[in-house]
Length: 355
Ligand SMILES: [Zn+2]
Image (cartoon, rainbow, N blue to C red):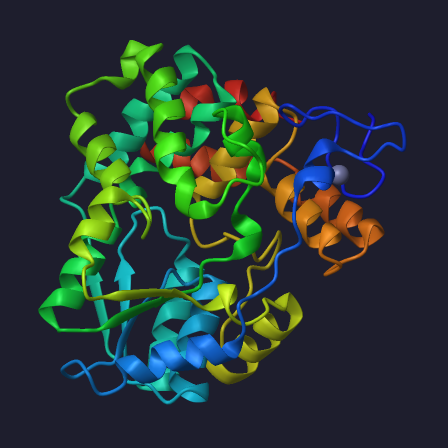
């Protein structure tokens, strides 16, 4: 299989083209990511300090590595009074729940949690997955996570209730996977702030082409998910007036080794026994990997690792080794997720025949 001579992307990546030196179009269009710097970050945090009620900032935590580090930084390094907030996602890895408990205990930070009505998340995933299986469009894989995309609404409500002036997230710039945008007709290097409407247009077009998505039981979740899918989504922007949204790693460099070393040492954070530390916290990530592998032959890992290679965070050789490990279908986890939504019989269709 042909791969780009600079990054890892193969000829399977959507819309890819290679020049005569074997360099891919993603590499030629992509600009290296440069964080804005700690100076502007400190200014924003100082503006929030002491301005609210009991808390200076809210940090959404998933139990994953990047949000754990965001909480550690604002509390230990910047001395802010933080409130940790967690969505009780029914597909959270049990280890992630233990990691959340440990980090808030170590830092002495209050934790507030919220959940969807019982069964709503599972029911939505089941319907969206059934719709996807009718016509397997890799462009619509992210839609199965619509229940989680509704999260900004309750997070903003909690911030308003406590009069918290800012939200600090561990959103990772290397997760801005460009192949998903390309599938929706959005340029790979489009600015994240413009992506929302363009993505929405692309998704709506495809959803209307597969009417099984338009199920009355999941439409409200889809709608709220699109209005509140990110801090840049329309609903979030309207509701968040007066609340600053700060992505830590868009200001300070994301150094994977340092992130892991500090959260392990200072928070007692534990990594999963096998597999990658990235997105281990939600079991549905492994289902998404299987969906991408069965349709595209690649996953979000190809894109993320390629970005890291382009920015010089990792060598191409090391990235290829990791890709080989990370792109194996985690059959056990896929089976667990499918079993919980009553679709266990679809295991072989999604994860391939048993070895
Ligand atoms: Zn490339």
